[in-house]
Length: 347
Image (cartoon, rainbow, N blue to C red; front, side, top):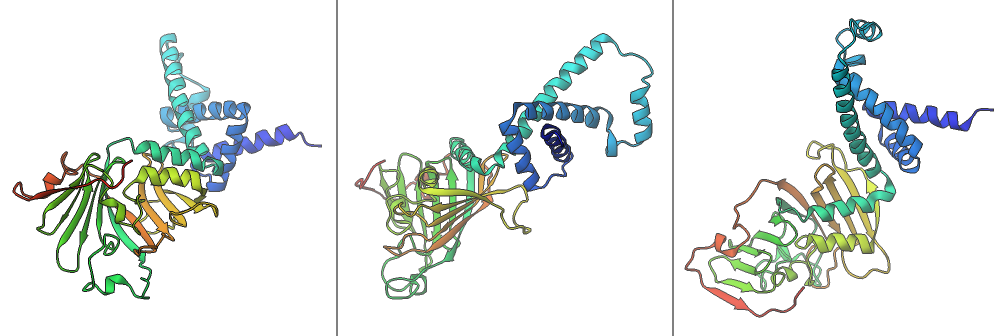
């Protein structure tokens, strides 16, 4: 009868070998992560292998990376002379530090692959909003929905006003952190509408009309989607926190195409049946290296007051914008008339 401990050790060492050499597939990475999360002995074995792998690969270009593998291993078995004790000590501690950093990094990456850690990945996305990084997204309307008369309001631009929820396809959204945004839309009459917030003051500019401002940072963004008081893509922190509270999370693999970087990970949230409001389903494609969202898809949006049924935000760039870009003064001449509106709600 086989020793189960021996079988597990053999399986674990094979998984570690494949992971360190970049041969493990997604299922093997998840299996290795489960072993590492459950067993301190497994983590110790992993540390030993990672240290040895780092020593061989970097210091001597070992194995398949060596120019002359036979000469390399012969040199290991018959060193020409004993190195200085000081050099040995220095190398030992240098490699110990390097291996420790490698172990921590690889352990974090493999643990991130565990299905039960989808909520931990979401926490990282929320924490990343504290960094004032500038992101430029293009909005795509995947499903415009139909208005109460059975038509698409975008097809009837000559009727009524131009609600913010319409004409989102092709709009530009600029975000900085979780409290500053600028949404730029092209309207059917040829004018450009801009809604924005610098985190303290929200504002709206349409064509060459007056600048409307409000002390409520969410005042003008409240009506962008179906008249809601919160707009998912303008208030990312609120949306992500709702995703944690009201949705069932799972990992998914983003489709592979030239426009989708292979490093991206996917999180999908399905709204609990008891939860009220919000999109029916949310998909997030993000880079685990910096927790930056590359694509956000909102499916099954509430449509009590019209607006699209499904939209996607696609990252266009993440270069820094001007320091004052989210202040209304950066988008109009100094002589433009300013109208202050009453606050309708607060956060």
